[in-house]
Image 1 (tube, rainbow, N blue to C red):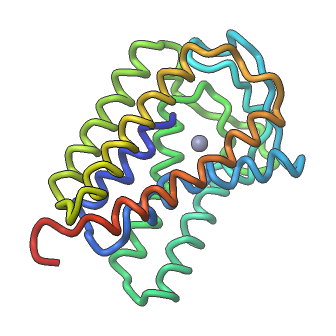
Image 2: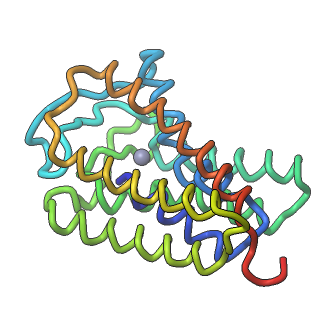
Length: 219
Ligand SMILES: [Zn+2]
């Protein structure tokens, strides 16, 4: 899942207006932001295996540190705790921790059984929405559209940048998503790692958007 995770980050702004959209993206996409580092360091592994599921040619051979249930519970706790130590805001820390965990729940729905429960244990789970391209697009598209709508409802542009930066990102994400479906499989695990790293720019984009918009109500 890709734009679905960003949809959840966008939606969260409607629950709590304190954290920037950049922080919300950071949380909801956190384990996919760690993953490319683990790949490039050789700690985790992915294989290009066209046909493994209808939607993606990626075979997530080994990624227990970023994507096991236990791993994500650890990251979720760590993310929330660090935010709490810095901002002393329990409610927002809790929300951010849940957002980190939400990534795994959405992955559980979409991935074929490749998500480990614990490092070192062979049991892998995944409901396999990816076996159907149309269902994947419908479910992920709905999450993304709902999230975008909620973010737009929760915030108001303070200037032109607040409009164009937001719409620019929404359109960009959809274009990347569609291109991904139609483009040939990547050449190597290394290439996947470097493309993965570029996602950090989307976090910065989130901060940029949020700086030019403010909560639509008081707050
Ligand atoms: Zn993921």
